Length: 458
Ligand code: PM9
Image (spheres, rainbow, N blue to C red):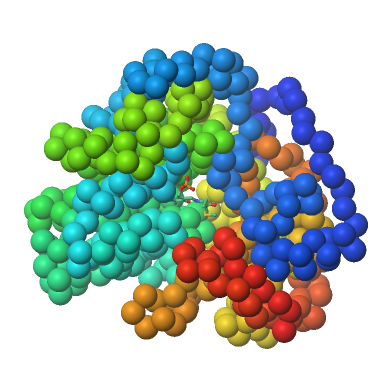
């Protein structure tokens, strides 16, 4: 089979210069940041793989759209364009813009959840679960077991185990489950997709019980690419068609436009139910802004509308995921323990396997992320015990099976040479892995501790 290049369907029009730092400068920066890569100054970072959230390069069309911002307080024409695009590409009836994904999660949780409810989902996401808990629900993970094993090659590790869901229904009763929270793709599992067959099965199962299906569609185009590549019957379907089919099997969605939709800020809540839309429209004015701007400038809504259209372009998504796979192939060739199959938005290093001499309470993924930064100025992030937080009832840490360092690839930002530099750095750190020490947490914030926690070397 001839190898097909993933080369980008764009050329570079503007560049942002980067500062190169010395190992001494990086050592000092790390100490000042309490070994938390979230607390580093971005100007001290060479290649920033902290997140793919809000870090994309916008296209000339998106930048041109910024000049078309209608900054009226009410009824901005950019809102109506965004509404039209959301209807056309995602098929949802109602749109409520929000400043970003978690703004939508807050409103959805408040309108759907009653105290004591249960929300099942295909693995937790940090902000999503917190909003569900703050609204009075308990989250239950119903993802398939394969998702918790970094080397299991299941093509759809984001799938929901309907038997696990059924057990929850039998234990708590369907009336305690307002909705199932379905993510495309599953971030904490390593960017793993859910199959269309599984979403259909879920829809069938929940429909007869009157349980809603709410989508976290933050990386839906990336999920659609894996369906196109791996699922029977989808090879000839466009990403746009697959995306719309996924949405049609759900009752509504939260969306962080900062990922798929190639914008630096923005999100929305989409709903089909008229009554729930009315409730959400009323709440959005409390937390975000008027229902026709939801915390966004008109120009941000314009850029997001254009970004949504660009995100479902087949050539774009092939190149976006192609770049991630390129880095994944390199690391696999070096036998670095990573989550396989490689997911949509980044490479996830298995820190338990990389640093087997460290206990999970020594925060191996946090320590590894710090070490990679010190080696090369490449900033990654922890997705393990620190991100998982504490069990509200027992007060103990959650101990997730997956203890990962995420190398998240921003969209349309870095080159193939950057990918090579990253893999060389990981290889160097891997060679010296036995010398890497664990960390001790010396400051722990109450909510989403991974953002602001501080550590010292043990
Ligand atoms: N995800 C990420 O880096 C940014 C915050 S955590 C560092 O992966 C999903 C699946 C996400 C997500 C954010 C949100 C929240 C919801 N669902 O960041 O509020 O990956 O726009 O979206 C981040 P906002």
